[in-house]
Image (cartoon, rainbow, N blue to C red):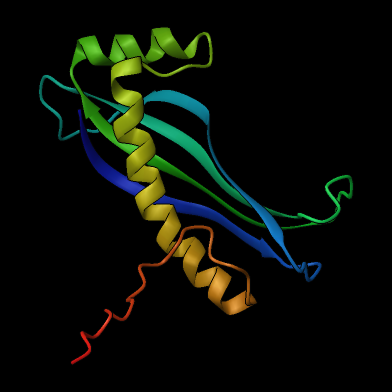
Length: 144
């Protein structure tokens, strides 16, 4: 399996409220898996996966409220796969799942691509980053 294409198709961000403390949830869902035709492939097939990446911010002090801030990114991944892998994807998708041995790599790929875009939007909307940044801490100086 090789990734040969990645596209953002929909990007939405909204900030409706300021929260003193936020509960932040990140979610990736797959909406569709379909076989596609690429003319240049010889002996291989291609699969298109549609996904949605969602970061939601809810008020940590008032969980019951429906008010939330949200970043939503929809897109697609184009994969080149063998005929057996293609059958495996399409068979798994009948139950709205992906092949277990492919899921981790696909989730990590989407998280890597979408987290960067989400961090840009969070900066522009002044939202708390959904992933922690590395921080430098001062070392204790020895006293003489």
